[in-house]
Length: 294
Image: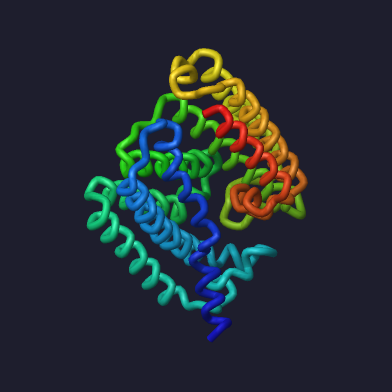
């Protein structure tokens, strides 16, 4: 029984639910007042997106089971390791997706439910088809992260500024490319293709250059915002501290980039950062600088 529960726990990947904190980002950066009702909706929204995300992870593991069995780390996943039957896993995924949409429509609104449905369709389409295509996969991954922000904006009735959208696209593209660098760096022979992926060592220089470009663009976006946006004066008591936050973001991306080149990310850069002491220190410093600026 304990082994079975552990397998299901691994399958739905609850640790990855931390990514749904992105729902809070729009209201934080819009500097809108936060009410008790808004907090309740955000909590419900995180539950909704966690259910939807887990449904997507299950579909992904079902689709990739054959490839995962050839992977040194992923072969231990419950479906690849034959600990859970694909049919049972698919039934759970359908149930979680249905619960996600029902809860969103009943507790938040039909618009959010439609947005979550679009997220599910995009996630499943990505897992079933687009993740095999070089370039397209990272673009869709970036879109899924930005879509979380848009859902958060819809839940809290706050809009995303062009600055925040630009920063998000560049930052998430950099993270998606860092994930691919880590995968390619783990390839034992140059001719080998990562399981279920289209990347090989042929793409190494392009991945490095792309990561550098988008990481640089993310930092430049922050600096341009600080230099030219009127919102800085309106919303921040001591905006000079935001320069410290920009430095923390820059150092964090450089740290992830270096670890990915060494093949030490272990898959997902967000989950790596959540347990990596250097990343946590830089994130805390950046957050402290932001709080000091407000």
